Length: 179
View 1 (tube, rainbow, N blue to C red):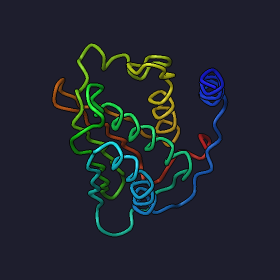
View 2 (view 1 turned 135 degrees about the vertical axis):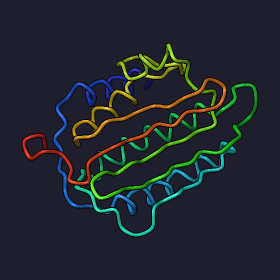
View 3 (view 1 turned 135 degrees about the horizontal axis):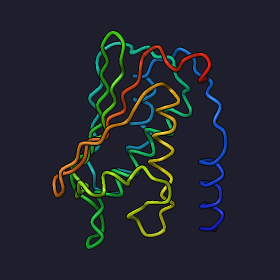
């Protein structure tokens, strides 16, 4: 079963992703994901909070791929916050969505152990994972999806204090030839 999951992850990562970008309200998409992920955080003892800019945030994006990218970040954050020495986790996981006239910014901020500067260079490389049994394809896939939308992903982390993964994408979406 584990080999099948790894193979599926690999095939998805290695395959060609075709964007179907349409005008979407990113706020509605993120709100749906927060509702979907709340029970997972509740089971882990993590307080999931959403700080979503008021009003619609219209962006040209592929809804399912955008959801996948955010979900990868949420799962990683939740797993990073779990203390292997206890039955659950503790702390807060914050998802913040904001925009200006041209750019969407989505933050996934956790209170996990953080990432050392040496590790920051390699976490987006395929097959790099700190989790036992992890495929190491979640962050590379997320970066690929974000870049296909014409954006980038940044990480701000302090070891022992947590991490802030920031997706930065143009509201106009990918160039026509990219989608």
